[in-house]
Every structure is written in C-alpha cells, then in structure tokens.
Length: 147
Image 1 (tube, helix red, strand yellow):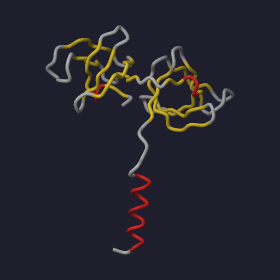
Image 2: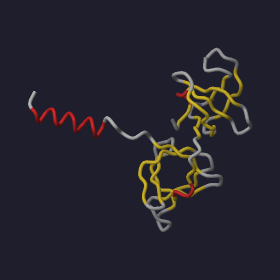
Image 3: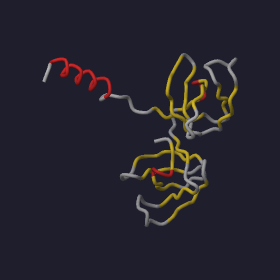
Image 4: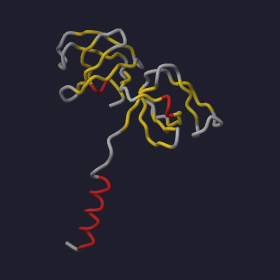
C-alpha cells in the first residue's frame, strides 16, 4: 500500500474516529428566546419552554447554536442552558414501564412533547426516566429525543 494512502487513513481515523459525543442540554426553568443570530438584536424566532432538551451544535462567547427535536437550528444565550439532561417524548404516546421490557407493567403514559428527566441508560433500546410528577420507569429510546 502506498505511504500516502496510509497517512490519509491515519489522518481520517484521527479526525473522525475520535469524534466528540453529542452535547445535549436542557433549557433552564422559565422560557428562553431563540434567535436567528447570536445577538439580542437578531430576529426572535420563538420561545422555548423550560426543561426542553436541545443539542448544542456551536458555542460562541455567551451564545450557543442549538438544534431542537424538530431539527430547527437557532441561537440561545448559553446562560439559559443547564447541564441537567432531559428527553422529549416524540411518539404519539410514550409508555413508561416498570422494567426495561415491553411486557413490563405500565407505570404511566405521556403525551407527545412532554419532557422527562433522563436518569440512566438501561438495556439496549431503553432509557430510565422520571416524569415531573415523580413517576420513574423505563421508556423505549425510539419514543424520545435527546439521547
């Protein structure tokens, strides 16, 4: 194999093999404004409610470009983002179960767009969560966004 191919392979592995994990945050208590640019003088796009998870795509001084569950990109003041992890139910009905099995007893059904506190990963395809009312259990990872 030619040396240039080896070096190209090593460079690609270094650049893409060590990719950073996705950075999810949640909006601090209270609503926050999302803008089209990293400035309060930018166009206000919409309000995002407390505990909504967002994916941080870019960070600038005091501002973060984020993606929401619908794929919209916008800017938010970084001070409104918490490290607390939440997940957003994207299925028509989210089913929280007592155990990480589809046949486990149902603890709670939640509507689409409800935020849940992320507690821990479970077995493949499941996540441990807590509802704002205190109910704790497991939900299928395909029913939520923010992982």
